[in-house]
Image (cartoon, rainbow, N blue to C red; front, side, top):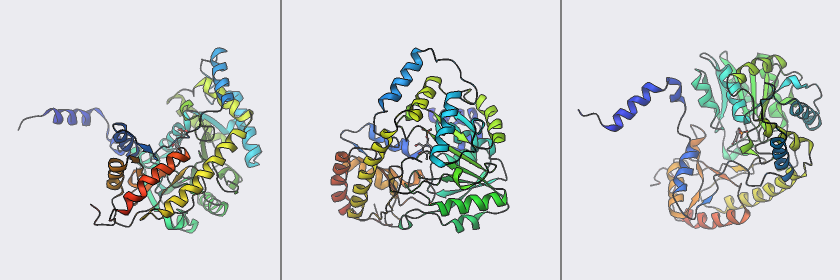
Length: 405
Ligand SMILES: Cc1ncc(COP(=O)(O)O)c(C=O)c1O
């Protein structure tokens, strides 16, 4: 048998990388974006970052920091001015005055924060409960480190809410932690205070940790209070809250995030952070200080526009044949279902090919959501209207379900 170039490549790949790399799938989002890159006249309802420009005073602060020579390393936990600004901000926003600077660690985006939290704790014999669908980072990070993932499915017909009792019933002897993401990517669902409190309190009682990804905590589209896990517990011994500037202030490329937890946990994670990225980007941390200390009305302006788009997208999804929608209350996503048995990946590819509209197939976010698609409305209202003008007639011509070809 001859050895082809492909065989050689595959073999060298297997021997080069350790087995943990098998836990990292080819992200479904990247696949779609790559497919769309080769096409003309594509409308993206696929984007996972804000489409607004970064507010000017934040850009100015970033540039000023560079000019002022702020180009060295900061302290390992982060820039002291940013740690204090974050402490003040959480005290103001969540009415929690027990946090000190020692409860924070500044990271390279929420991605590094999640990486540290999950890979420092996941281990064989430890089970992590996540929802299905969920943000694509968590399960691979847990599995890469030998941890086990237990999934709790959510459904469009229930607005992708979780029943806290179902989560509590899923907690067992091996459960080590629960990963919550509210507002959620990909569903836009915001869990109400009763849900978060019930889960956090039962978890603390059983010695189970809660890792909360709250990167969309400001993108709350209805007049409701956002119940951060930080405001649902009297101590931080069993919780880690993770967030960043990426979505709230439209500064995803500046890569600044943070973890809030007990001082003991932060001390341990600081050591790991030193061995991962050393410190977060220094001038970008100064941009973060400006974001928190400066005029924050820019956030309200962005949230109002997301709300306007959300209202329209909900109407358009309701008008579209085959799609089962709901009203997402946060972030900038909706995750409608297609008739049971429909292959969402096939649909997304065909939709892109035949209409130029790019959405993300549900299976990028979980194991039981192949008949879902994620629609992002981080795009202008005109583009959203045009995308649905293409999608709705196309969907009318399809025959979805298990016979969908
Ligand atoms: C739920 C969720 N968590 C974390 C991240 C990563 O955020 P950051 O840019 O701060 O790394 C994203 C980005 O899309 C996200 O949607």
